[in-house]
Length: 287
Image (cartoon, rainbow, N blue to C red; front, side, top):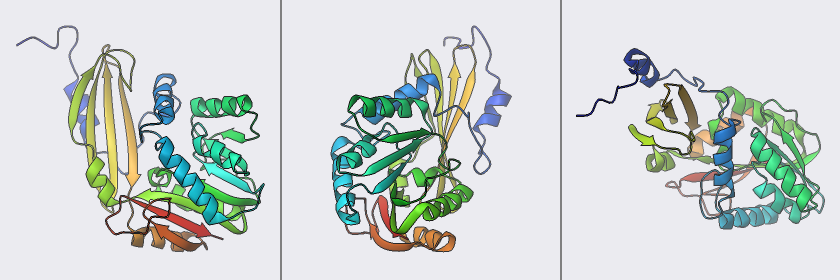
């Protein structure tokens, strides 16, 4: 057997510490969304029209925007906020339908791309870089959307804060539409304990080892953890927390934290009738 420790020794005590089950909502490396290398890979995934990576595929996006447009039935020029807008894939389409669109996202790479596209296409979309749990929202919104499970990655405190911020920013009869993943979805995509070696991939551009771990917590909370060890021993930890919901738990959370009226519950954001076995729940709230 070849010696894998020719140049350096792994610190197994440190490795054990990293691989132990983290405390609730323990943070990973803070530059995940704005890491120069990773954010570029994320943008590639957003822009791939065939996959459901960072964004849903092009066909799903178009169907979603068209259905939400019909559902809200707002007048031309209505003000819509796209929370977690990424590179503007939904924002562009809402703008083309006549909305006055504002997009907020925490990835500089995605926001810069969205701004460049808006300038290139002569689209008057306002894009804001920042953490949408901290950025103040404009008042007088007619609608706000939060699409592809972004709600699920927030802590309970930030979910409560966001719901109230959106509510306070909406006009009377304004819409807040978002979707959440379910335990059924988590069973299909759950991260297993595994590892792989890469010459250069999503996490790093050079040789590295990735240790993948999935942890379950009470109340349908799940953590996907990635420990990335580079060839020089540099170690990074990336953590993605996901709160899954049932119809009962998401309705209870909305009722407990805001005065929103829930108008519709779907199995997606295209109006598919709700089914208990669904992977996703689409929620239409109205002020």
